[in-house]
Length: 373
Ligand code: PRF
Image (cartoon, rainbow, N blue to C red; front, side):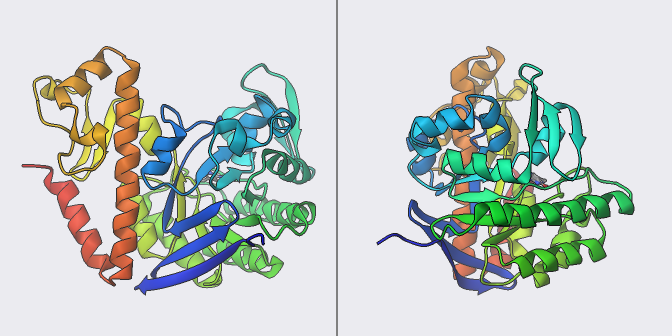
């Protein structure tokens, strides 16, 4: 018998909750961090390593994969899971956000977004229907509606227009998605930093009866208190029985604060991108391995971590690899960073289950602030 997509909330601690998303390809334990696998790869990581760290789901990108190698080609090769050798759940972003940040000569109208590829300048059109078609061709388990995300700060009228367009696109995505009990379609709350718009967006999406609800349009230039205030505004309007996903967030500090406010899912390039730029996330805070102070430091990043990248190699060696531009430096730091993010999520889940989330967050932040000495 096939498994339908379901979300079961578990324990709570304040507004935070644990939960389980079930679907045919596996179970996602929430709160979950989804490593970003933009171009059918979590950069510098083998799929087995990603899974072994405790990641239950990875994110793929409609925008990148439609341009290269092409959604129809991935489908002909058996779908994205087979293509990248990741048999577990995949969530795909819808493309609109990446068009706005990467493509050239973008034009948005009611129909969709027309843009030129950042790869070869060729012209493409992404409509709500085509975004869902592409996500289907990829075989995505959790599909996102096409939306328009505006950078902050922005004028209220601009935020309102983008929010309303995103609502109309959500309807079109829902029709295009149809009925697929084994897969999910999530809506995306927009509305800038205007509480009235955020609430209206959430209510309208919830009325459509989607499988989960994301909060988009945050971590796009606003200070953290604004982001957290918007989460607090939206959260009471989202149903407890559906997963809540904060898109593109964030730093470890952003994640713990959003979990405290009831968010279930996250994705961010931060751990993987930082790893390719010489930065390590650890229990003791962020460490810049480019810094000369590590040149003769024989200690590993974290002797108590279970991850070989964190407990084996000296900081001096990592410093050398980073300075020399060696590929292994990027691989080890990415591995360490994803290990830290997944350990943080499992710590958050345990703390919620034990109803001691506030204490756990206070201890975690104290360790970041203290460093090691
Ligand atoms: N919309 C979509 N993807 C996103 C965002 C959004 O608003 C963000 C904003 N942080 C990241 N990724 N579709």
